[in-house]
Length: 165
Image (tube, rainbow, N blue to C red):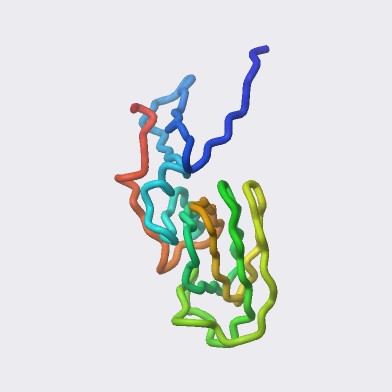
């Protein structure tokens, strides 16, 4: 058996990586690197890196304080690098129409629900109907499991590498 070492990337130290095709056509594969996507993104852009029908995996570069967001469905945020704080408030306003995250205009109305401090590897639940704001003192990377929505940015031609490269 060969020895394998797991190497975790970060915003400051990542390798693009690659796919090793064993018995297939390389044209069947496309991939991107979450840290590379975050390194080229503006703070708080939600760049789609994987999609399955209406479901999306988005990468966000967190730096400073984000606007407030809400979604009509649960979302999950996984801190891949750095440290983030998630503020949660009960959103008393109207629920957004449609799937995905929506930006709120200004502060949400409603009581505070708490805050979550998350570091690398910590998974947070963003409950349906809650408002949330993410902040980070230093550049950090957040992966969202959500649904395709108005804030989802698709840059497939810029971020994807094929199995042939």
